[in-house]
Image: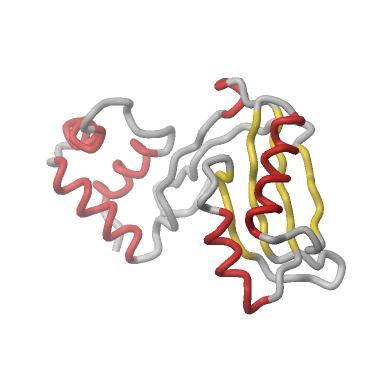
Length: 162
């Protein structure tokens, strides 16, 4: 059961964590809890499924990364885990996840590659293909054409997402 302190905590993390060495202590001070209590509550909120995941939102364009490619792959089901783990060894692969294949979209492994320009991304992709042995694998390369607002989930007082 989520209580008022949990809602206060969710409101505090909605726009990101404070950039300091002890962000949970800072949040705790604002809502009257210790750093340990904040961590304990976040752990329980995740365990209970109230929070699916905690992660970092990187605004790549601000850091000079102007080319972003979502590469979608058609990988045999029995190889998806192995291929995904191999892809994640590359620092330029920032996301890698599986989705079900659909009749109209037969791709099941998705990875995101960021670079300063398209040429860099294409070189990184060529390296990934060579090292992971993916030369004959069906894929699509989808470069971003615009950037949308990036933010975490925001919850209302009754626990629903805004």
